[in-house]
Length: 121
Image (cartoon, rainbow, N blue to C red; front, side):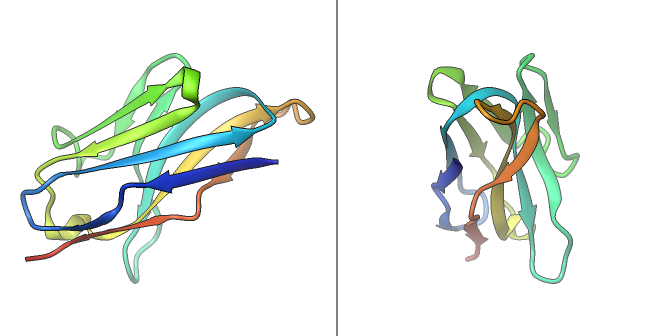
Protein backbone atom coordinates (compact mmCIF):
# COMPACT_ATOMS: atom_id res chain seq x y z
CA UNK A 1 0.00 0.00 0.00
CA UNK A 2 1.26 3.46 -0.90
CA UNK A 3 0.64 6.62 1.07
CA UNK A 4 1.33 10.22 0.15
CA UNK A 5 1.38 12.52 3.16
CA UNK A 6 1.38 16.26 2.60
CA UNK A 7 2.27 19.03 5.00
CA UNK A 8 3.00 22.73 5.01
CA UNK A 9 -0.25 24.37 4.00
CA UNK A 10 -1.78 27.25 5.87
CA UNK A 11 -2.79 30.89 5.84
CA UNK A 12 -0.43 33.48 4.42
CA UNK A 13 -0.65 37.10 3.38
CA UNK A 14 -0.22 38.17 -0.25
CA UNK A 15 3.45 38.32 -1.12
CA UNK A 16 4.30 35.71 1.49
CA UNK A 17 5.83 32.27 1.16
CA UNK A 18 4.95 28.70 2.05
CA UNK A 19 6.71 25.40 1.55
CA UNK A 20 4.73 22.24 0.94
CA UNK A 21 6.15 18.77 1.47
CA UNK A 22 4.88 15.38 0.35
CA UNK A 23 6.41 12.10 1.44
CA UNK A 24 5.61 8.85 -0.32
CA UNK A 25 5.80 5.63 1.67
CA UNK A 26 4.95 1.98 1.23
CA UNK A 27 6.12 -0.80 -1.04
CA UNK A 28 7.51 1.54 -3.66
CA UNK A 29 9.64 0.10 -6.41
CA UNK A 30 10.28 3.22 -8.49
CA UNK A 31 8.87 6.72 -8.84
CA UNK A 32 8.44 8.04 -12.37
CA UNK A 33 7.20 11.49 -11.43
CA UNK A 34 6.02 13.53 -8.49
CA UNK A 35 4.14 16.75 -8.62
CA UNK A 36 1.58 19.13 -7.25
CA UNK A 37 -1.92 19.93 -8.43
CA UNK A 38 -4.41 22.37 -6.99
CA UNK A 39 -8.14 22.84 -6.99
CA UNK A 40 -9.85 26.11 -6.13
CA UNK A 41 -13.56 26.24 -5.25
CA UNK A 42 -15.69 25.85 -8.34
CA UNK A 43 -12.72 25.09 -10.57
CA UNK A 44 -11.13 21.98 -12.02
CA UNK A 45 -8.01 20.49 -10.58
CA UNK A 46 -4.95 21.84 -12.41
CA UNK A 47 -1.30 21.01 -12.64
CA UNK A 48 0.96 23.34 -10.66
CA UNK A 49 4.38 21.72 -11.05
CA UNK A 50 5.86 18.33 -11.76
CA UNK A 51 9.29 16.73 -11.65
CA UNK A 52 10.25 13.47 -13.31
CA UNK A 53 12.79 10.81 -12.53
CA UNK A 54 14.99 12.39 -15.16
CA UNK A 55 15.01 15.64 -13.16
CA UNK A 56 12.99 17.55 -15.71
CA UNK A 57 10.45 20.00 -14.35
CA UNK A 58 7.34 21.63 -15.70
CA UNK A 59 5.30 24.49 -14.28
CA UNK A 60 1.95 26.06 -14.91
CA UNK A 61 2.44 29.45 -16.54
CA UNK A 62 0.68 31.12 -13.62
CA UNK A 63 3.35 30.01 -11.13
CA UNK A 64 6.54 30.18 -13.19
CA UNK A 65 9.27 32.26 -11.51
CA UNK A 66 7.34 32.17 -8.21
CA UNK A 67 7.16 28.46 -7.36
CA UNK A 68 9.98 25.92 -7.30
CA UNK A 69 9.55 22.16 -7.19
CA UNK A 70 12.31 19.95 -5.85
CA UNK A 71 12.69 16.33 -4.91
CA UNK A 72 14.69 14.25 -2.45
CA UNK A 73 14.91 10.83 -4.06
CA UNK A 74 16.42 9.22 -0.98
CA UNK A 75 13.37 10.23 1.05
CA UNK A 76 10.77 9.81 -1.73
CA UNK A 77 9.74 13.38 -0.93
CA UNK A 78 8.77 16.27 -3.15
CA UNK A 79 8.67 19.91 -2.10
CA UNK A 80 6.98 22.98 -3.46
CA UNK A 81 8.47 26.31 -2.47
CA UNK A 82 5.86 28.98 -3.10
CA UNK A 83 6.97 32.61 -3.07
CA UNK A 84 5.18 35.86 -3.88
CA UNK A 85 1.85 34.23 -3.20
CA UNK A 86 -1.26 35.81 -4.67
CA UNK A 87 -4.93 35.66 -3.76
CA UNK A 88 -5.52 33.43 -6.79
CA UNK A 89 -3.13 30.81 -5.42
CA UNK A 90 -5.73 29.94 -2.80
CA UNK A 91 -6.70 26.30 -3.29
CA UNK A 92 -6.38 22.80 -1.96
CA UNK A 93 -3.00 21.49 -3.09
CA UNK A 94 -2.70 17.80 -3.86
CA UNK A 95 0.45 15.78 -4.12
CA UNK A 96 0.63 13.30 -6.99
CA UNK A 97 3.03 10.47 -7.68
CA UNK A 98 3.29 8.12 -10.64
CA UNK A 99 5.04 5.06 -9.39
CA UNK A 100 5.42 1.30 -9.42
CA UNK A 101 5.33 -0.98 -6.43
CA UNK A 102 6.82 -4.36 -5.64
CA UNK A 103 3.55 -5.96 -6.76
CA UNK A 104 2.45 -3.57 -9.53
CA UNK A 105 4.96 -3.01 -12.29
CA UNK A 106 2.71 -0.77 -14.38
CA UNK A 107 3.01 2.89 -13.22
CA UNK A 108 -0.05 4.07 -11.36
CA UNK A 109 -1.28 7.44 -10.14
CA UNK A 110 -1.44 8.05 -6.42
CA UNK A 111 -2.83 11.11 -4.66
CA UNK A 112 -2.39 12.70 -1.29
CA UNK A 113 -5.29 13.89 0.83
CA UNK A 114 -4.71 17.56 0.01
CA UNK A 115 -3.56 20.52 2.03
CA UNK A 116 -5.28 23.91 2.12
CA UNK A 117 -3.37 27.02 1.09
CA UNK A 118 -5.16 30.28 1.75
CA UNK A 119 -3.76 33.63 0.67
CA UNK A 120 -5.58 36.42 2.45
CA UNK A 121 -4.91 39.79 3.98
